[in-house]
Image (cartoon, rainbow, N blue to C red):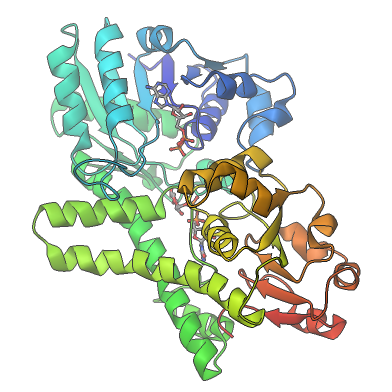
Length: 463
Ligand code: UDX
Ligand code: ADP
């Protein structure tokens, strides 16, 4: 029997876009995305499709093309589970903030709650697909819960990690490098795998759909992110050496990237990587390695995080040193708060940590980001608990006008590589700043020579 109804638990940065694309490409399947968060679901259902809660280029068009046809967003989790033949779990798996594995292991409580809910509600056989990034062997934990607390129905668990990157989610989903599906090697497992393969085969070439056992699939996701993050930390480590030696990290990146064995992607030196995956997944890998007593393996991967923390902190330190060792009472304009361009996601964004350090030195920060809302920025800062909520609001303001952010500022810090920053009237910005006017370009985004010609003191990363 073919899959007729899919439900996805979790309407976030992964669940939302993924299900929108599946719905668009599979008009015969009814796709229902459910979430406990009523506000989020209301936003997905907003009459004006531009108001959906996740900003991704191209996403609103896809949602508009199938919402109400075969794509639905709802808070009725039980009903959607009951109806579905296939259930995707796409809930958040943050790093644990308490107990064993605190600060490292993934917190699986949301996953477990989902599994228990599925077990309680399901009245017929179902295929359950892990979409959230999970530590290795989570599938077997889910299976345990389903088999032991369920209503005697059969569950097949598949691992189908999502490799989309935010900001390019739609393109990544429409033309993935590969789709990975892990499942049991039993006949039932292979049948379940085939059903998911058939869905992706609606638009993904067959040779790009890989099937493996569950554990290989789970570990591949962590490993892909660890390798990518490692490249960024490697080039960032070199950036500091370049600054000391007079080499230019952009030139070095170009030169090594042209080696076809190395390749040119993910060699952009920056203020440090952010996002919901890199740090979390590496910490997960470290935790798993440690739990098997593999201390050298754990230390090896942990260094990628240590380097990234250093890169974020040294950016702020450099601003303080350059502004004559004090930023107290000085206005610093932040251009960008998101962890990369073309997303409104701020999780683990370097901007949060740079702001934290500068606020501790009593700087006055004015933030402009084209897609991130003020309440999110204060949520990120308040979460750190470095200062009271009042102090954060006294030290930092958010504006929706980049020129206002820079007005009478001592310095500008570029934290996100939004394309629009390149198009600003930088002469106008310069004229309204205090002199000397500094730019700290944490993304090597702007035209250094042009800015220097205007009169800015320009500092990029790694040169
Ligand atoms: C990542 C993986 O790319 C994706 O496959 C996985 O599914 C989820 O994690 P994402 O976190 O959305 O995706 O963004 P990514 O493009 O990987 O960037 C992560 C961080 O690294 C960003 O902060 C980005 O600015 C930074 N980065 C990336 C660099 O600093 N330099 C680079 O060269 C590339
Ligand atoms: P990701 O980037 O992995 O998609 P998000 O945090 O953006 O992560 O999305 C996860 C979503 O899962 C959140 O909107 C959250 O409300 C939802 N969620 C978590 N647990 C449950 C649950 N038991 N039932 C329904 N939705 C849930």
